[in-house]
Image (cartoon, rainbow, N blue to C red; front, side):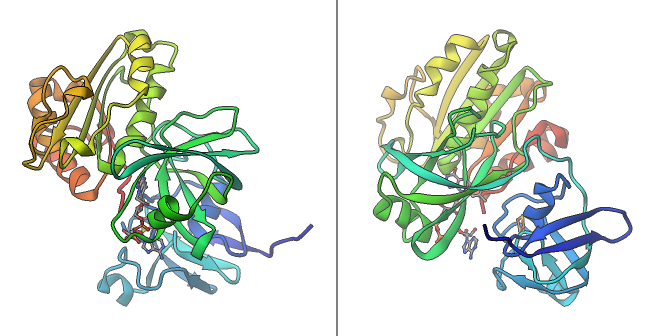
Amino acid sequence: MTHRTEHTVSVDGSDVRFACSEGDTLLRAALRAGVGLSYECNSGSCGSCRYELLEGEVRDRRPDAPGLTARDRRKHRRLACQSEPLTSCTVRLGAKAESAPHRPLRQTATLREIRPLTHDMSEFVFVTGRPAAFSPGQYAMLLLPEGQVERAYSMSNVGNCYGEWRFVVKRAPGGEATSILFDKLEVGARVVLDGPYGHAYLRRDNPHAVCVGGGSGVGAMISVLLGAAALPDADSRTVHLFLGGRSPADLFRPAALELAQSRLGALHFHTAVSGTSPDGAEALGTGGSPYRGFLHEAVLDVLGDTLTDFTFYAAGPPAMTDALARTLVLEKGLTADQLHFDRFC
Ligand SMILES: Cc1cc2nc3c(=O)[nH]c(=O)nc-3n(C[C@H](O)[C@H](O)[C@H](O)COP(=O)(O)OP(=O)(O)OC[C@H]3O[C@@H](n4cnc5c(N)ncnc54)[C@H](O)[C@@H]3O)c2cc1C
Ligand code: FES
């Protein structure tokens, strides 16, 4: 049995300490130990995990990470999601956050199936030896065997005892990870799956939910929908699912709709296309053509004055989630705890 060296991370101004194994990041080690930290992308892009290193030495996984501004760098700020401690450290952290219900775990996963969904989206089904423990709407980091590329992908199913982890992935033109997933990985291939992560998981308090998924965000929203449908009081819950793309060819009707429909009090499915391509999405079963315009505009149009009755979940390109957040919070007066999303950047 091999033992990895462990370093101790001490949080300045508190009695919080946690162990970080060699090669792990400060953020992931904190979350594995049940210490809640502020973060979103886990990929070095959003900047929400900034901290200050007071003592000790760390290695930066991504020295040019866009999550740090020039000012941050001048002030010697770092990103907890990209820092691997090389010695024991003392850190000053930014805002603390609530701990998610499941602690992340690194394990091997085997690719069991690939199901094409659209011209550039497929569902990848992986299995692990342990139960798949996560909350609807969370994501995992997949470390792909070729080139050791790691990216975040949201689960499109719900936690289960079979160890099944589903991900709806959209091919990024020329993208490093998606080229491996779509062009190289074959059924039976093994990857390292580390998760779950993310704060944008289903909350139970409000029975009225809106799920807004743009492009690659559809998987996370299917997971939230299925999670709501699996709750004991599902028959008193309402869910609006909005999916958007540039053209009808970017959209598909999730198979989960039928199951959710049979359990929820009310389920409404809406689609929106932002481009100017011809019609062709009648088969989506929304009872009409997709809304023409941006996804956040469709949400405003459909929900009107009832907007503030709902808790919102969103996933997809940052431009979409940012536009939605701006509209809902700044213009429509939603409180921050009524909107949950982790930026896909
Ligand atoms: C929380 C979260 C959930 C996501 N869920 C989904 C999902 O369910 N489905 C889906 O299709 N996509 C999802 N994404 C996007 C996904 O992680 C990839 O960015 C996307 O697949 C493109 O990856 P690529 O390598 O093919 O493209 P590339 O263009 O090669 O890389 C694009 C992205 O990778 C990240 N990146 C680049 N270099 C590094 C590095 N050295 N280390 C870490 N990150 C780096 C950057 O964020 C960049 O925007 C999610 C992203 C986040 C943050
Ligand atoms: S930059 Fe670290 S969580 Fe986004």
